[in-house]
Length: 150
Figure 1 (tube, helix red, strand yellow):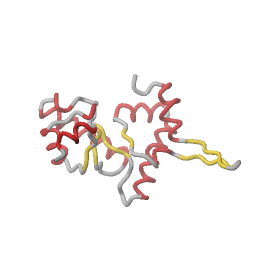
Figure 2 (cartoon, one colour):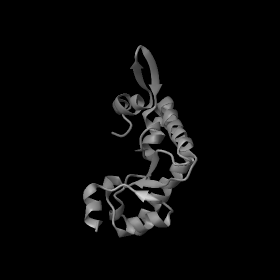
Figure 3 (tube, one colour):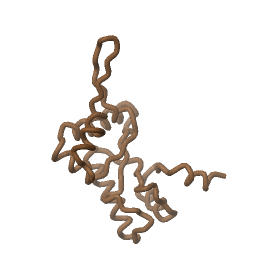
Protein backbone atom coordinates (compact mmCIF):
# COMPACT_ATOMS: atom_id res chain seq x y z
CA UNK A 1 0.00 0.00 0.00
CA UNK A 2 1.24 3.47 -0.88
CA UNK A 3 2.52 5.42 2.08
CA UNK A 4 2.66 2.60 4.58
CA UNK A 5 4.68 3.35 7.67
CA UNK A 6 7.06 0.50 6.75
CA UNK A 7 7.92 2.15 3.44
CA UNK A 8 8.32 5.47 5.19
CA UNK A 9 10.63 4.07 7.85
CA UNK A 10 12.63 1.95 5.40
CA UNK A 11 12.90 4.34 2.46
CA UNK A 12 11.36 7.81 2.40
CA UNK A 13 12.46 9.02 5.84
CA UNK A 14 15.97 7.48 5.85
CA UNK A 15 16.75 9.00 2.44
CA UNK A 16 15.72 12.41 3.74
CA UNK A 17 18.17 12.31 6.66
CA UNK A 18 21.17 10.03 6.09
CA UNK A 19 23.69 10.06 8.91
CA UNK A 20 27.27 9.94 7.63
CA UNK A 21 30.17 9.48 10.03
CA UNK A 22 33.65 10.30 8.78
CA UNK A 23 36.65 10.35 11.11
CA UNK A 24 34.43 10.66 14.17
CA UNK A 25 32.49 13.61 12.73
CA UNK A 26 28.82 13.09 11.94
CA UNK A 27 26.75 14.96 9.39
CA UNK A 28 23.22 14.50 8.07
CA UNK A 29 22.64 14.48 4.31
CA UNK A 30 19.33 14.69 2.46
CA UNK A 31 19.75 12.23 -0.43
CA UNK A 32 16.86 13.80 -2.32
CA UNK A 33 18.99 16.91 -2.84
CA UNK A 34 21.53 14.71 -4.66
CA UNK A 35 19.33 12.49 -6.88
CA UNK A 36 16.41 12.74 -9.28
CA UNK A 37 13.17 11.55 -7.68
CA UNK A 38 9.44 11.43 -8.22
CA UNK A 39 6.57 11.07 -5.80
CA UNK A 40 2.97 11.05 -6.92
CA UNK A 41 0.27 13.29 -5.48
CA UNK A 42 -1.27 10.45 -3.44
CA UNK A 43 1.97 9.60 -1.65
CA UNK A 44 2.93 13.24 -1.11
CA UNK A 45 -0.50 13.98 0.36
CA UNK A 46 -0.13 11.02 2.71
CA UNK A 47 3.39 12.05 3.75
CA UNK A 48 2.25 15.64 4.32
CA UNK A 49 -0.48 14.44 6.72
CA UNK A 50 1.33 11.56 8.42
CA UNK A 51 5.06 12.32 8.23
CA UNK A 52 5.30 16.08 7.94
CA UNK A 53 9.02 16.22 8.72
CA UNK A 54 9.89 13.79 5.91
CA UNK A 55 7.54 15.64 3.55
CA UNK A 56 9.22 18.96 4.41
CA UNK A 57 12.67 17.46 3.75
CA UNK A 58 11.56 16.23 0.31
CA UNK A 59 10.24 19.67 -0.61
CA UNK A 60 13.38 21.34 0.79
CA UNK A 61 15.64 18.98 -1.18
CA UNK A 62 14.05 20.05 -4.45
CA UNK A 63 14.42 23.71 -3.49
CA UNK A 64 18.08 23.11 -2.62
CA UNK A 65 18.76 21.36 -5.93
CA UNK A 66 16.88 24.05 -7.89
CA UNK A 67 19.02 26.74 -6.25
CA UNK A 68 22.16 24.78 -7.02
CA UNK A 69 21.22 24.08 -10.67
CA UNK A 70 19.76 27.43 -11.79
CA UNK A 71 16.12 26.45 -11.28
CA UNK A 72 16.45 22.82 -12.39
CA UNK A 73 15.34 20.87 -9.33
CA UNK A 74 15.66 17.14 -8.73
CA UNK A 75 11.93 16.45 -8.36
CA UNK A 76 10.10 15.01 -11.36
CA UNK A 77 6.32 15.21 -11.78
CA UNK A 78 4.08 12.16 -12.04
CA UNK A 79 0.69 11.54 -13.64
CA UNK A 80 -1.95 12.30 -11.03
CA UNK A 81 -3.31 8.80 -10.32
CA UNK A 82 -0.50 6.67 -11.74
CA UNK A 83 -2.74 5.72 -14.67
CA UNK A 84 -1.16 3.90 -17.61
CA UNK A 85 -1.44 6.86 -19.98
CA UNK A 86 -1.52 5.05 -23.37
CA UNK A 87 -4.57 3.11 -22.12
CA UNK A 88 -6.48 6.29 -21.23
CA UNK A 89 -8.76 8.10 -23.64
CA UNK A 90 -7.48 11.51 -24.72
CA UNK A 91 -9.57 13.45 -22.16
CA UNK A 92 -8.48 11.28 -19.21
CA UNK A 93 -4.85 11.31 -20.38
CA UNK A 94 -4.84 15.12 -20.54
CA UNK A 95 -6.50 15.30 -17.10
CA UNK A 96 -3.93 12.92 -15.56
CA UNK A 97 -1.04 14.98 -16.95
CA UNK A 98 -2.47 18.41 -16.13
CA UNK A 99 -3.53 17.47 -12.60
CA UNK A 100 -0.14 15.87 -11.98
CA UNK A 101 1.60 19.03 -13.18
CA UNK A 102 -0.70 21.25 -11.10
CA UNK A 103 -0.04 19.21 -7.96
CA UNK A 104 3.71 19.35 -8.64
CA UNK A 105 3.60 23.14 -9.01
CA UNK A 106 1.49 23.48 -5.84
CA UNK A 107 3.96 21.43 -3.79
CA UNK A 108 7.34 22.39 -5.24
CA UNK A 109 6.55 25.97 -6.28
CA UNK A 110 7.98 25.59 -9.75
CA UNK A 111 7.04 24.25 -13.15
CA UNK A 112 7.96 20.63 -13.78
CA UNK A 113 10.44 19.92 -16.54
CA UNK A 114 9.68 16.22 -16.78
CA UNK A 115 7.07 13.65 -15.87
CA UNK A 116 7.64 10.09 -14.75
CA UNK A 117 5.34 7.92 -16.85
CA UNK A 118 3.70 5.09 -14.90
CA UNK A 119 5.42 1.84 -15.91
CA UNK A 120 7.31 4.03 -18.44
CA UNK A 121 4.34 3.36 -20.76
CA UNK A 122 4.16 5.78 -23.65
CA UNK A 123 3.10 6.16 -27.23
CA UNK A 124 3.10 9.02 -29.72
CA UNK A 125 -0.09 10.50 -28.23
CA UNK A 126 1.43 10.59 -24.73
CA UNK A 127 4.71 12.07 -25.94
CA UNK A 128 2.83 14.68 -28.00
CA UNK A 129 0.76 15.67 -24.96
CA UNK A 130 3.88 16.05 -22.81
CA UNK A 131 5.44 18.27 -25.47
CA UNK A 132 2.23 20.32 -25.71
CA UNK A 133 2.28 20.75 -21.91
CA UNK A 134 5.82 22.15 -22.08
CA UNK A 135 7.77 19.24 -20.62
CA UNK A 136 11.39 19.08 -21.70
CA UNK A 137 12.29 15.41 -21.26
CA UNK A 138 10.91 12.02 -20.34
CA UNK A 139 12.50 8.96 -18.80
CA UNK A 140 12.09 5.76 -20.80
CA UNK A 141 13.19 2.19 -20.32
CA UNK A 142 16.39 1.36 -22.27
CA UNK A 143 14.58 -0.89 -24.73
CA UNK A 144 12.13 1.91 -25.57
CA UNK A 145 14.92 4.29 -26.50
CA UNK A 146 16.85 1.60 -28.34
CA UNK A 147 13.88 0.96 -30.65
CA UNK A 148 13.96 4.59 -31.79
CA UNK A 149 17.72 5.08 -31.97
CA UNK A 150 19.04 5.39 -35.52
